[in-house]
Amino acid sequence: MSLRQELLARPGRKVRLAEHDPGNTLGFTDKLAAREELEANVRRLAALQYRLFAEGRRAVLVVFQAMDAGGKDGAIRRVMSGLNPQSCRVTSFKKPSEAELAHDFLWRIHKAVPARGEIGIFNRSHYEDVLVVRVHNLVPKAVWSERYEDINRFEKLLARNDVVLLKFFLHISRKEQRERLLARVEDPERNWKITPEDLEERKYWGDYVRAYEEAIERCSTGHAPWYIIPANHKWFRDLAVSQILVETLEGLKPKFPAPKFDLSKVRVV
Image 1 (cartoon, rainbow, N blue to C red):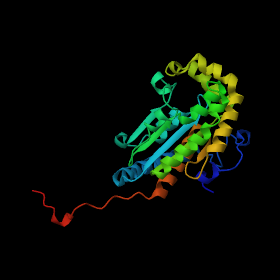
Image 2 (cartoon, rainbow, N blue to C red):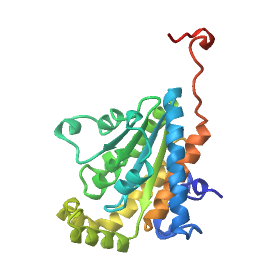
Image 3 (tube, one colour):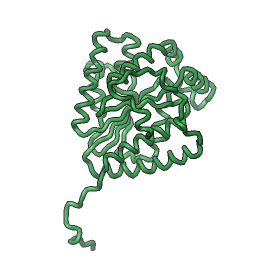
């Protein structure tokens, strides 16, 4: 079974994160071999991106979600390192601005959806509106509980308009999060990333687990699947994400378009 099949949150099935070992490497044990395979996948992604851009028929949207320190930045940096920024954009969704709050919760998201021929990467996403919003009671339950249906309809709309969606939940343990936060505190090059809010959020770990379980369970669909990526080991996380991306893009079979004129008549003088 491929990593894509193994890590898929199958539509219609219950999701219990306790049943998914964040330290699992699915039989992969050789870090060097995994790194070499990642590098090969990065090269393959670059070639597939070029074809996707030239073809100009479909877009790819990649969503990353995780607990704090879950590795979203690292996965994006390593897996997407070979992509051409001409047709690739990363969007980070932070606390909504006043202007964004004056619109529906999907307004800021839809504006960032990639055009045909492009790859869009979301560092956090529309799912924050059924995660942090739910955990911290920022809107009533009657409001956020209806957003799952809104999200599914929105993603269905994107799929009908040639946007291929992949959603990755980078799954780390609470212990691993603690170690990563402590490492940030001790590292002068990374301690700027940590805030008191990050430490406060650890108190809500169980609430976030339940919120993620429901979001993945209710919004993993055939046209917009969720993948639960064991992410305690960064090398395996990157390998898994890259392999799923490669398999997905290869499945699209992007092709270079035929020339729009008769090349035999071209004369270069």
